[in-house]
Image (cartoon, rainbow, N blue to C red; front, side, top):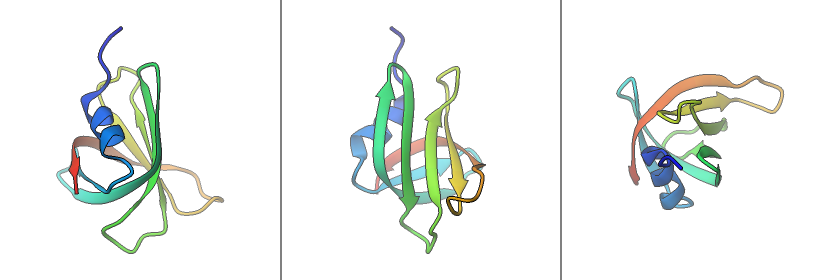
Length: 93
């Protein structure tokens, strides 16, 4: 079986402690993941942002080719998910 995505593994290993993420556009943020899971190579997680006053929920998933961890944001249960970008680096906050 092919390797798991390195960024996804880091997110999973640091969780539930806060994790600092760097996105593909160069922006950064600190997140706390409520849950993470792997299903074979596919990674999924959900959490919130810790470094700003933000009530949105964030969802993390690996891309189909397993090369990227994509991030989407949702303001409330009634809203649709909007893609934020992809994570290029993750480290313990």
